[in-house]
Length: 227
Image (cartoon, rainbow, N blue to C red; front, side, top):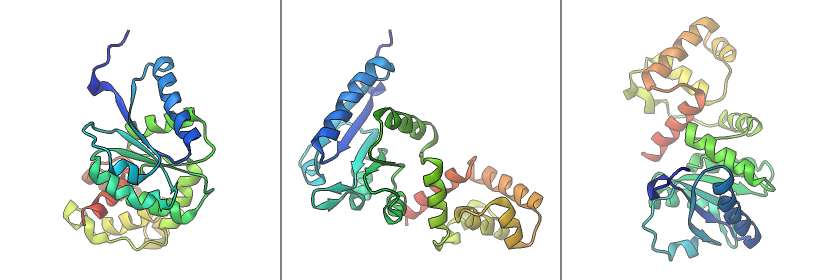
């Protein structure tokens, strides 16, 4: 039998104004700990950011499950505040707004690591958390495609990569990758071969010490937060 120390717990914070959902999540984490051999610990479970602000919390928090519509406030507006207070916490946004493009883009830009639509199975939340722990973020394919389409209209500040040892051509490719263009589309846009684009992307990933487009997006988001 595995022996858990306090540091081996996956520590959860819940901000959800629907009592039934909040209680269901708490119950699930208790059951999951037994069935999946994972030890969860609920650090806080509140119905609003205002209530959370009254709590004195000294524990680290690994995940915050954050509802968007919290009584008279929008949870997305508090993502950066939560990231500052709970340094290192991974925020998973939950909402009943089906494919609200504005909320999706804003939540990700603010620093959310995943976006789940209600109703959802608690087991899906568990799978999402596992993915976030292993890769740093998680979006379902349809959401990831939608996000890339939305980002295509974003003006990315390429200057953020000038200190990373990238050439001007590589920086141009980084911007197009962030906008969601496929390798073939990048080649057509720049008037070069797909083979050359692939070589540039391999070198970009090597220089930035990343392995995928999603890691590149996370890196850019981190740069955004520091400026």
